[in-house]
Amino acid sequence: MAAPSARSVRVHVDLLPVADLGPDETAIVVDVLRMTTTATVLAELGLAGLAIVADVDRARQRARADGALLLGERQALPLPGFDGGNSPLEYTAARVAGRNAVLCTTNGSAAVEACAGAAGVLLGSLRNAAAVARLALATGTRAVRVVCAGTGGSVSLDDVVAAGAIVVALTDAEASAALDDNALLAHAAATSDRAATLLERSRHGRVLQRAGYAADIVEAARLDVTDVVMERIPGSADAFAPVTPAAALE
Image (cartoon, rainbow, N blue to C red):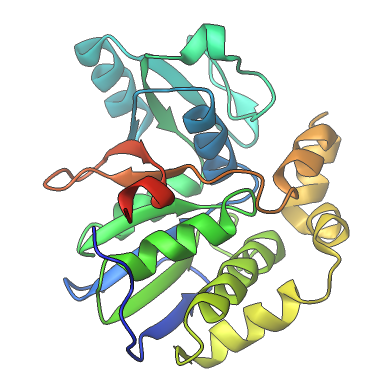
């Protein structure tokens, strides 16, 4: 994959998923609490491949067909009969390395499906903000869309903060990037230097704290601790594989 060229890429932030992405756009899906954070951690731990499926029954069927781990949640809690939930802290390399998994969550999985028309789809979080920005720019598409999953159909502060960190990384890497108003808004939220506090105070953050997952918020707030990104496999609608931008750009 070639290094990013000097061009004026357009950067958009969708505060909620929309289904109008086109073949000249790269999507970065953000569900920082917690789907894209968990997906990033799974990649760090050596997961071989990840299918993102929004419907619970289809997720069960996909996992059986692929012999994959079945992971996910509804309303923050693990689903009955699943192999695991949606906490980035519940997995180890011994459990997931070399395996495939299916991930089905309340908000993030539907956001991924909404991006089906994009040229490429990446899973972004605070953990890999700089890496996912570099990889998005390296695709060479005319526009990068940072798509926030939201919470229950409403704009979610936690996703806006994470999207903003990715926008900051995009503008650091390409100073000529043209930002829309939502991107400027997210950028301002990210530069407040209070990511952990904002995630905790968000509606979704409060839900997780009540459910006993306060430690997940701390983990999700860690910025740029990995270079690994889950990228949709070309030609697939829902299958992702881990990529390291530094290696991809050589």
